[in-house]
Image 1 (spheres, rainbow, N blue to C red):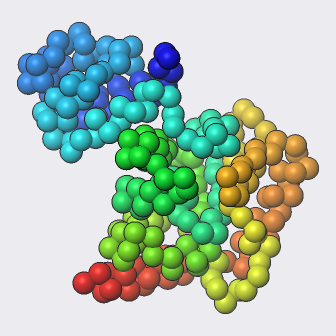
Image 2: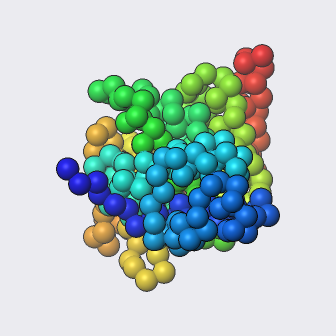
Length: 274
């Protein structure tokens, strides 16, 4: 069976290679000498025209000291590995200028650390092999790259307090994950709002919601449950999701108070881990 190619991922791979090479202070010629690859081959990879193989990736990781990044990135070149019901939403996510999400149980995918994401992807049913899990993991971590641009998309995240309290992967993993969110919030890259347990039942309790706005498309809403997900484009349905989100936001803690709570919970996990 032929391997499905993913041109977008080849371009992202090439951009990452160029960024890492320039950060290391190497020209293409210098990298080619150190990695025992032709300069032309490196140029084609950086331009997204050529697909690196496993040995290429390992040489690049070794020379650029990237800790296996380029090897882990390889599975995305075979087509993005995501749940079938999420494929359409993933396409929209990459084009959005504004994203507002509500997460009732887990940290949203774009904010997940590697350790947290690995634990989530390892816990599903039916069980996945390490290879299957790692393909999903690479795609999930690549989603976080949308935050590399400080200005777009604008991201608001509303988290149920249960998300903070559920010890996915144990206290050390949770401490790292929550501090990652705090860092993003303190740097003003994202806004975070926590819906505390004290609120009780609230308007958006039922499930995950992602609202997205675009430069040249109407807004959409994506809702997700167990093994299911749906993109809503009907204006009346999208407006209803937006209204529910806004209603719940009225019960959430402020950005500043939310960060303080997340920071406090992270410290509790740190003490537990020690």
